[in-house]
Image 1: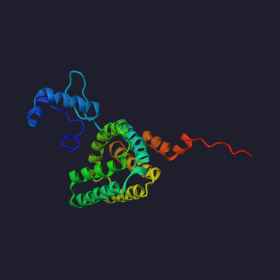
Image 2 (image 1 turned 90 degrees about the vertical axis):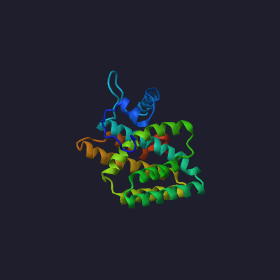
Image 3 (image 1 turned 135 degrees about the vertical axis):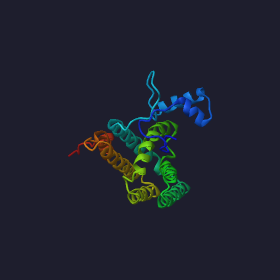
Image 4 (image 1 turned 90 degrees about the horizontal axis):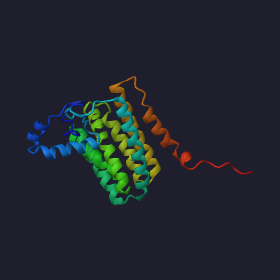
Length: 226
């Protein structure tokens, strides 16, 4: 419900009301809320009702920077290992996203978009996959908000996806990592401009600098011997 945009940012949640709506007891509901809190999708403070996060600019900046770093690492590791079947699944997901965009079906587009991107992270291993999923769940909340308000044109997203798919099909992990990072950064900067135009996306910019210059950071160039 949170990821579908059923609640506005900052909405206070009634445990009793949710339990009735979902036809569950308070005990499993509280356990679910505890798990959502760990994933960053709700805020729970002592003696206060749980609520959805507000669109805090620093939180947005940090989340997008985290997803940039994790997603680019995952793509760099996974894309060279993709099979033709994996590429075919990604291509099908992209077609589904395009059809959903034509219908204005945001739920369908979000589901297809997630399948498309998850295709480039198939071979990262359980540890990195767990970290990426935690950050990505919160990230999807922000992406849905943007897509529902058409802050990023469908055509722009389609063009980005086509470039990412081409890089994946060529098994170019580093290129796919940079393209994915660039798309995430673009969305984050757009969202911050909507929430707080004067906010400098310093975390996003710092993450992008790490991606662009990562070869020199990991393997410093040695001085050429005469």
